[in-house]
Amino acid sequence: MWLGRPPTYNLLISEPDEFSSLSGVDLMRKKIKFYAAGGNGKAGLPDGKCGFNYQMDLAAASSELELLPVDLPVVFAGGSGSALKIGSVMNQTRPDHIIRRSYEAYFDGIAKDRPTWDQLRVVYRSLPSLRTLWDTSLPGNIEVSQEGIITYGAKPIRNRSYAYVNDLDEMRLKITELMIYDPREK
Picture 1 (cartoon, rainbow, N blue to C red):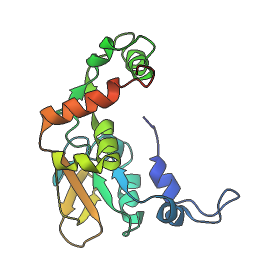
Picture 2 (tube, helix red, strand yellow):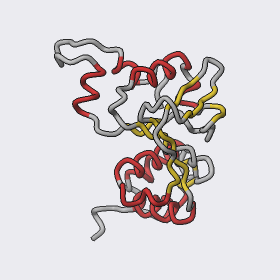
Picture 3 (tube, rainbow, N blue to C red):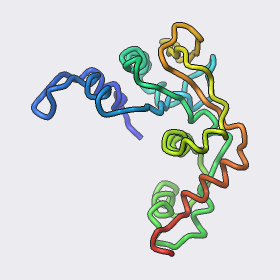
Picture 4 (cartoon, rainbow, N blue to C red):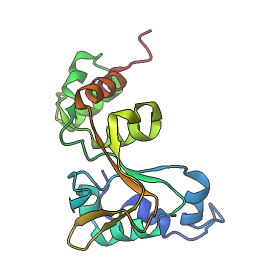
């Protein structure tokens, strides 16, 4: 979790420097093919309160959405995370499993269930074959107001969509399988 300005916003406003001759916007255009956004944690889309990541700095969140290149597909796929909590299953894995250790560190010693906003974003982005487990809006525009309201509109088309899981049980199985996987056990 970050505190302060969102990292994507900081990248988008960056200018060329000693590490790259490209601006942040141009660097994103060149290096990123798809952006799984994280501002819909409260499942506010198509019109409601935005999530924690955006609430922390509404001005930066609004600017991030404005600055993201239109040719870069953006999908808010974590909105079902509050309804889908996973983590306690990690207690059944080896004590040295890295994800188990992460959950135990977060919860002071025992892995407990928590929302899956981030896992959902990763799965949506990384496993296109599982996108049938989501209902995804048509590309349009998504904005954040200074009052913390996130809204979707069909126009103007700025390549922004949102997605909600349509089969929570199946998604729970898939994410659990991915989380408990241990390459050391073959």
